[in-house]
Amino acid sequence: MLVHSALALTLVSSLAAPVLARSPHGAPAPHLRARAEASAPTASTHAQTSRVVAGAATTEAASATVTAAATKKAAAAEGSPLPLTQYTYAYSDVPYQVNPYKSIRGPQSGYNICNSTTAGDSSQCQTLIANDIQDFCLWGSSLTGDGLDTIGDIEAAVVAYCTTDKHGARVIKPGAITGVQVLKTPAYIQWTGFIDQTALHLTKDDTGGELDPHGADLQGNPLGGLVYSTGLPSGDNQTYLQAVEWNNFIGGGVFCLKLCDPAYYAKHGDQFFCQNKYDRIGCARNMPAAYRDGEFSVCDSELQDLVGVYTEDGQVKTYTQEPEGTVPNPPYTPRVPKSSNCKTYASTELWAAPTTSSASSMSTGQTSSSASSAGVTGHAAAASAGPSDSSKSTTGNGATFLVASSGFLALVAGAAVLLARL
Image 1 (cartoon, rainbow, N blue to C red):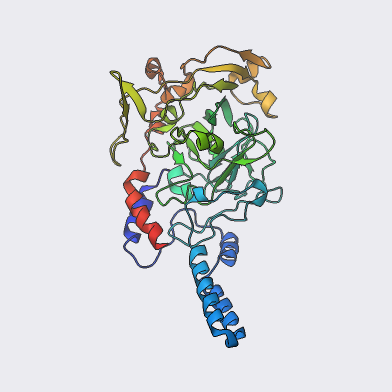
Image 2 (cartoon, one colour):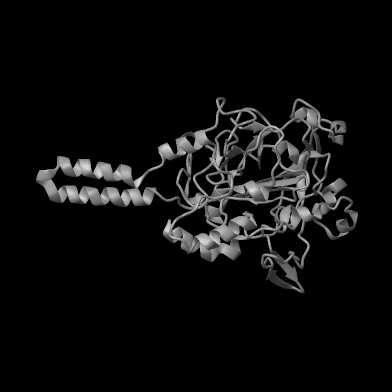
């Protein structure tokens, strides 16, 4: 949900303007723009259709008038994007682009139908797949070659990078991921880990931010981005189900990704674990976990506490993120959920090439039924989830979790006005 400050100014100024400006974020490549514009509904196309219908029905003027009015109404409805979370599709019905509409930040820069014809280092796939520890994707820059970017500058146009080549996306280079833990719960599935983020075409020192299906204008970051998984708690480990609510932080060499199960929220609507309003307090507080570099493991886990909710002196309180321009200072330390039935892997068991981590020394299929601790090793100390870990930080990556952005709350009123105009 991180919104770059330049975009915030663009949004605020554009709300008062009669003409919608193009976003400075991730302008689509010429061939994608042409395809998007060719596929986008236009008022002129519908107007021509209306005239043909009216001309062919001169003896039925009343009927023609009704048809023209209905066509005009349909054109207006189809010409503006809905909030991204309102677009739901069976995996087999995913459109070429979810958001081909011209708006302040649109149209969408990439595409959602991804297969062997789109795979490779220049893929613009914006459908993210996350199934298990061996098969998952993260969002990264759409740049190619030696280009490097920052999340804040390209959030609207990020593309999928995957650990395998079977999703029509880009492939994360061997050795880039140096540790990952997957936690399975009744409500969500979560990935946390460590990565050389230059493999995602992000600068090494980028402290990053949050990507999610909302954003200040409710159109998501990336625009039109969809997320699917065979590993959701209510799934069968074979069928791709859409995770409508999700979030992904990346920065400072740390990543975290959470996919929330819509079936769980149909029964427990008051428990929402994919909050997007805490976009500047990072992985450690949004997705508390062990964060051990060099470890590759899968565990069952109890549910985390709701983000921002804590107990002090016997009273349940809710933290409100500080206004933009103020460094967040949450007054609590998140509890790391207890995990069990853990299974650890060597990196070579997951992917063809070994990583530079110590994971290769782990024994195959090692299991544990004990609860995981809140211990953090290596530069993960910056993401410390326990009070005893705060003294272990040695790399200064704490900035990863105090990201400067134009948060959702600061622009929600403007977004409402924007949506009314679209």
